[in-house]
Length: 197
Image (tube, rainbow, N blue to C red; front, side, top):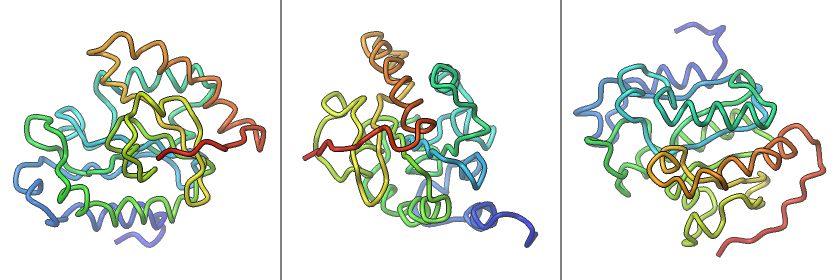
């Protein structure tokens, strides 16, 4: 193993053989995450889709194009962010990840956050939001608001894929771009005081 790689990439290589849950039986490959070890913001989605399972990178399908548009509106590039999912293998048929699958990957996500130490976390969709905020609140009630959790500023947003199927979610998704810009690029100006319960 190449010792010159950042520790997060070495961990990703180790995770490539993970057999922690039954998703390993049908995946093409583990989709670990993309981005620099110096990223100021981490985007956390739900699970890889078909394109991601085939390509080995998160958010490279249609939802990824919408995420790219959000980043552009927030004056951020993909080269500046780290993108991953709460589950690293594709659930069959793109079904929702199960509790035991999320639990099997939780240690990986915790390690990614520990190694990256980002300024902010953006949760994409209900599953990532519930996991990071430890809340039962629905995504619509917390979308576009900043929370403080475990020393991180957390911005929950609709999953980009949800905006494809429900056009009413597209406007609030993109409306969060200025807040994301301020959160990532604006220093301490963005004060997180919200509380999700």
